[in-house]
Image (cartoon, each protein chain N blue to C red):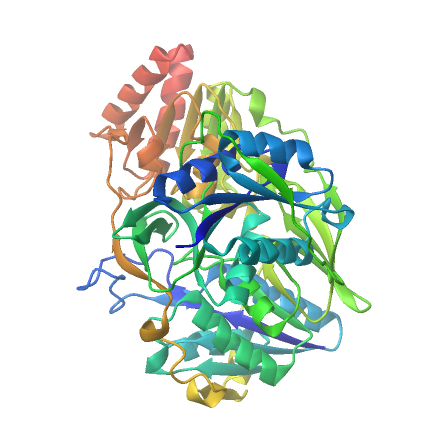
Length: 260
Length: 321
C-alpha cells in the first residue's frame, strides 16, 4: 500500500505574531516553525498503518528551505521518502493552487491513500484536502477520528457537532483529512533521526510538475489583503494587582453571583 | 451578474438556523443579483417550502433516496448541478461538518475562488470582500476576490438569521448521481460516560496552559470542588489524552451554559468559545493578554494560573467556612 501524507510547515503555536510591513501576513523572521499539528496526526495515522502491515509512507510539503527540516522530522518518525516542492513562484498561492501542486505529486505517486490534517494552525482554512480529492477524482472525508482499512476501501468515522460520529465507507484511492486526537503522535527516536538523514528527499519546482504560471500570487483567485488584530470591543474587565488582591476581587464577583 | 446560491442544510427534519443566516447574508450583499437556494435530501418538499417562505427565494430541491443522508459524492453532484442551473456567481454554504466536507470540492470542480469560515461579507464596488479569522482566532483577515465566481462557507452563529417572510418557489432539480464512491453507514452518538456538564451551575475548565495531566486533579478539580461545580476541558487536553472526551467543552463536545464558567489556561479558539460563550458569567485566567478568551469573558486575570488558582481555591474554601 502506498500512503501519501501532505504536511504543512506553520509558525510554532506559541510564536510571536507580529504583522509584516505590507500588513498581509505575519513576520516570519526570527520565529520557530513546526509541522502543522493536524498534519502530525495524519502522519502518525499513516505510520500506524505502515506498522500494521506493508506500506510505504511518502511525505510531501511545500515551501522554502526551512520546510526541509519538517520533512526530515517526518522521515525521522518513520516516513520512507520525502518530496519538497520549493519554488519562489509558489509564494502567495491560494488553496486551490496548493491543491493543484499536491494533485500533481499525487498523480506521479499514485497513492492508495492520501492523509492530511483537517486544517492548518495558521490559516485554519480546511480547504486543501477536499480540493485535492476533487482534482484527482477520488472521494474524501474530513474531520476523521477513526480510520479503518478494509478490502477495496476504508471506513471512516467523521466528527460531527456534539461529538457524534458519522460512519462512512469510501472506495480507495481516497483522501482522508484527520481531526486532532485521532491518535497519539509518536516522537522521532534518536535512531530514527539518524536514519532520516539517508532517506531520499526530492526537490521539485512548479515547472517540474507542469504548473509554471498557474500558481503564486498572480494566479490566486482569492487572497488575504490584510490581517490585523481584531477590534477589541469591550471584552473582559481585567483585574490587576497582587495574587492576594486578584483573588479577593474574584471571590467578591463570585459572591455577587450568589454562589458562596 | 450571476445569482447567489444558498445551499441550505436540514437537521432533525428542519432547515437549520444557519441556513436562515445565509439567507440574510445573501440578501445583504445581493444588490440586483437574484437569491436562489438548494435543499438536498429525501422527501424534503416541506422543508423546501418553509425555506422558500423565509428568505430562500427560488428554491431548488435535489430530492432522492440516495440523498437521505449526507454523503460527499451525492451532495457534491447535487450542488454542482444547482450551480450550473442557476449560473451562480456566489455559492454560500454553512461551515458545518457537512459544509466543510463538500464545499472545497465544489470550488475545485469549478476552478473558482474559495473562502472558508467567514464571519462577514461586504460588497464593495461590485466585488465581494470576506472576513475570517486566522491563527486560531488571534487575528482577523480581510480577503479579496480576483475571480468571477466563488464558493464561500459561513460560520454558523456569526451573522443574523433572516426574519420575515418572502414569496418563493420550489422547483425540482434533476441530478444524475451516477455511482457513489462514498456511502453513509450510520451515526454514532457520543457517549457521556457519566460526565454531564449541562446540569452544573459552575464549571472550571482547564486548557493546554495547565501543562500536564496531573495538574488537572491537583489544580483544576480542587477549584471545581470548592465551588461545588464540575471540571471541564478544552479540546487540546482531550486530544493529548489527559482527560476523556466526556469532559470536552466545545463545538464537538458539550455546549454549556452554567451560572459561572472559569476558563483556566484556555486560549479561546472559536471551537471552544462556541461551547461556553452562552455562560451567564465567565472568568478567564491566562498568562497571554492577547488570548481570544478575554473577548468573551466578563472578568479576566492575566497571570500565572499556578499562582492564582490554588490561592482562589483556598479563599473560596475559607469563604464557605
